[in-house]
Length: 618
Image 1 (cartoon, one colour):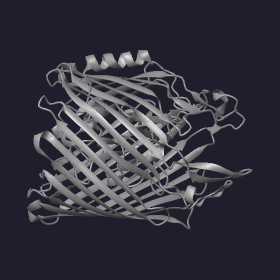
Image 2 (cartoon, rainbow, N blue to C red; image 1 turned 90 degrees about the horizontal axis):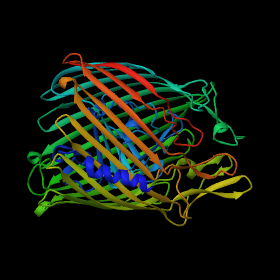
Image 3 (cartoon, rainbow, N blue to C red; image 1 turned 135 degrees about the horizontal axis):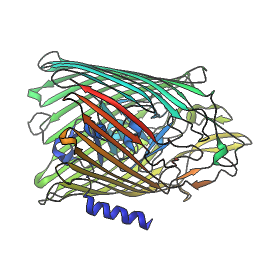
Image 4 (cartoon, rainbow, N blue to C red; image 1 turned 180 degrees about the vertical axis):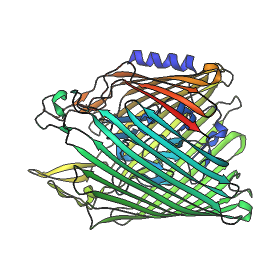
């Protein structure tokens, strides 16, 4: 531990790392941290933004890999086809994943990041800490919003192809004029995969195809209409697990017969109307998510979520909403969800919320919100949050936030009647209380910036299963608190005109009410990276190092003990070279030094894999 802390201290001091927004020019970044966009320099909560340019330069091709370098985020995989994300030591179900602002998961289940590709993604925003005031349940620990590409003015089109550990291809076309535009993005990835059991047997691959169609138009000078539709189909292989296992090597068993499919649909339509010269705006939207999951050709499990949302924003200082220094927003939502596993039941919630944002004197910015959820199947819930940002005369910035978040009971926890389990309809939502405080420090005459943030979160009413007799179980809200605290350090430095350095470090201490360590929440994660513009300005070379230590997981054999996984360090490299002004040659190597990687007991990571490709844009 001392060695890792020393490495981090050196990196902070010499590499002059990045702020909570992971960018230098903060006033140019807008994040989805409220009911309306927020300038990052005025945002009091912790957020990281990964841009399209950064994703391309670093050779990142999946969302799950992009998130591995974000401070405060832990990514664990059972192979490459079942990936969970935990923010600040929270449960995987406590992070809400959005695609263009629409929930990626349908029903009460979480969204599994598997083959979700970064092709045609404009940015990934990671909001850390409770966001339930703005996004409702499941946003207890944070939100990941994946924003897809829409295209700029005029006609844009292009595509890419890559081969190596599989084959992937993408295409994009958009047309945008003064009054609106339309875009279509396509992608297909046929990943050969690898043997998840690590025994050198049959490879477990993934085949995924995605299409996204979006458009908007100014129907009048004050009325804007728009829509988005996303379809994704995935087939993937996986291995079996053995109940007779005695160690990690025998737990995951190579099995060529295990297959599954995922079928995802997200769709939304909206209308935005301006009044009073833009001082008052209205937005009415309808969003729907439908997902299907099958295993080995069996009947699919279908989940769905529908939401109708209304938002009214008003500039209190007489300015347009987009420019207002004092802004108030009223929000109302009705959401329903369902699952074919419990066709007789649905969850419904009607919600109202209020947000105030103000830029006060002397560099102080304030954001405050409250929300009330009226639930039909379980106890109602109220949440709140507060964010403060203060910029000193020397350009250092203090940011702090506090708030609460909730996670609703799942269908199985409420209505189970199988596998020896009986649901408990008297459950109430899990609740998370949180505060954080951080300091953003410009360094090296503004060429870099470092942000250090301390966070503290407490989960109460955590839902857990309990024995009700021999071989029978139910659920209850657990007594006591699950405590999580830690440190997030991030930074960036433009060391020279051609060399950019970056780093991130996360320390997490997450414990159960009995004091035991929470599983799959690494205590230490360190990332170091560099991008060099080279080839006479025609290309770039990037390298990223990631070190993980102090990660515990349950061994599902023997006494089912919680044990620490081996530490590991991986290095990925990527390069780009412009063959012409429009066509770029790409190459990357994953796990350059063939490190043994395991996030969960028994599952192997991918060996060294080489990819080459072409990217064209017009």
